[in-house]
Length: 146
Figure (cartoon, rainbow, N blue to C red):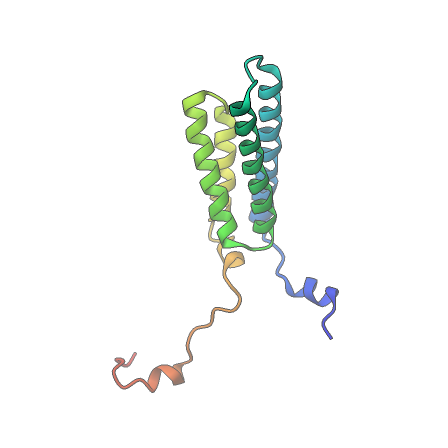
């Protein structure tokens, strides 16, 4: 019988670069949510259905960042790509509206780069991908020999 402890032990521990990146993504997320709230509360022009829709969309994006950050910590390669895509989109939007400071853009770049360093890559590989055995490759008559 498999217990929860067995499942926890079977999951590989994230390398230090991944843990550092997750902390940076967490800081980026908190600052992003706080700035979204501050801008929406402090701007007197924030009324109407369009503004409410934009605010709801912003929180959906921040929720996606939070979920992707947790999934990265669990080894999801798709989640790290989602984080990079959202950070890239947010950086482009910050250039056009002046919302995020260059320091936060730099923070997201550093966090993204950490996820793709050679020491982090093995953590994101699928455990069930196996190379075909030499025996199965040698039975194919059309395949050239190594």
